[in-house]
Image (cartoon, rainbow, N blue to C red; front, side):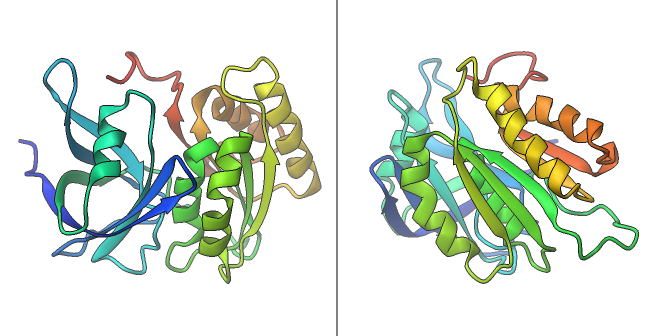
Length: 245
């Protein structure tokens, strides 16, 4: 039997550039999430089929605080769910389920505790990367963000502010847009350079599935143990049998 939905109250809403909105919610009971996980949010909007528009959003706030969380919502053209969340006002409530996801830093390191992880995010996958880098007791990370120019311009100040004092080294590299023929070769060349310079004890890839699955194979060819590579596809997931509604 499915567990009943949880609820949260919008405490603050802040615009981030023209397309994004940072939403901070309060919850009555500790959420129990770990950095890198996500929630399935019932946006309050309905799809054309009449079903509720439920969307996955990474928790980008630190898991040091469990009675509140933040998500960043990009407003999509003709997107009923994102439009509803952009219209949400402080004091209003949402329902959600979770936390979900296995993009968590939980593998034993056999004496390599001080070596930095490699975290590669494409596009808005940077929100999950922030959750990882800002997790309670997070180990050092080398964070590579492959973003289209519009995403980078809008989210860069938020990303830099959240990482301040966290010990993560951020490199931002504007990348070709999704489905561009040079996108995967570009990402592979940038990540291969990182792997050759300092092979990491563990790696995390999040964002465009058409990019991160080849990057996982690339990490293996550079000697990264497959058991210490995790990934989460935000879109273009080759393992999804049917496209999301």
